[in-house]
Length: 214
Image (tube, rainbow, N blue to C red; front, side, top):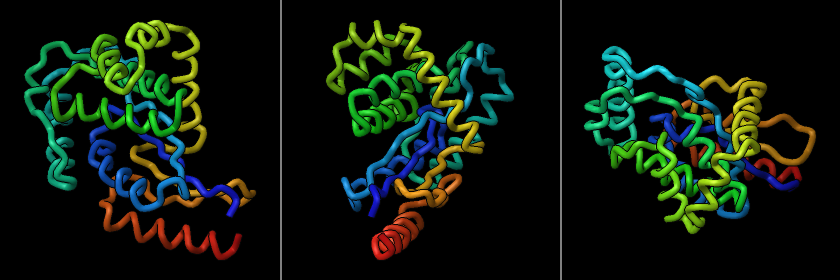
């Protein structure tokens, strides 16, 4: 098989992606290096500069409740007591990309760590200091991270990811596709949340089919 792999379009501040995190863990545990995951930041609300109002808080809380019910992932609803919070997803995405530069696995680890900090522990992942602490917990020097985070090339790489997602026709997250290095088009595995018990059989069937035709 010509280097079968997955492409995962996600955003660290997308609640359904947090719900999908255990599915990504299960895929990695099942397939390991046989099916590496290429992570692309989708850009949920990049560059937003307007503080959340009551309506937006209610809408987002409604989403969180649905994700918690569907996935059993933990959420700290004290988040909605924050005042003047600007839901800008670009900084968190940029942090993931900086860690992804070191390895694809570290990028996935950064995504999960930022999601956990935001959703389960009510940390402000739009704050460079919070993101630097997370990067340090993953083995990156804090000052190196902060210097890189503020660089123009890190910002450009982040927006380039958003552009890839848009040009790929991805309009929602999580989106997971499977493909190889052949000229065949990618196979959409899911557009939106599905539980592990739904995703693994689909992926297994695709992987076995590709293996027999390689």
